[in-house]
Each structure stands twice: as structure tokens, then as C-alpha cells.
Length: 47
Image 1 (cartoon, helix red, strand yellow):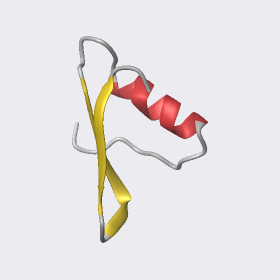
Image 2 (cartoon, rainbow, N blue to C red):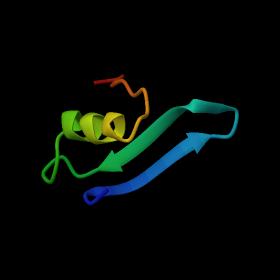
Image 3 (cartoon, rainbow, N blue to C red):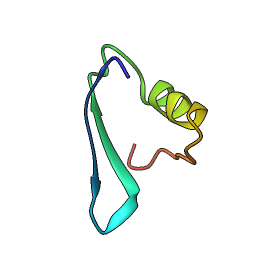
């Protein structure tokens, strides 16, 4: 997705993903909506 510069998962915890993005280009809620729209059961944590 445009605006995300990195995304990674731990090899033993595939249910956890970190996404790096510039908050001036997009908000965390948009990342969440786009991820959910692709069928992934995503949640925001750590905000």
C-alpha cells in the first residue's frame, strides 16, 4: 500500500505484524481499514 515503507512479522508469531508508515501521509486507522478490507482480522495495538 502506498505510504507504508515497511512491514514485517516474527517467524514464530505470524499473527503479529509491524507496519512502518509516515503519519504525515496516512493515519493508523487507514492502515487498519485497508488491511481489514483485504480480509485480514487486524487490530491496532500499542497506540
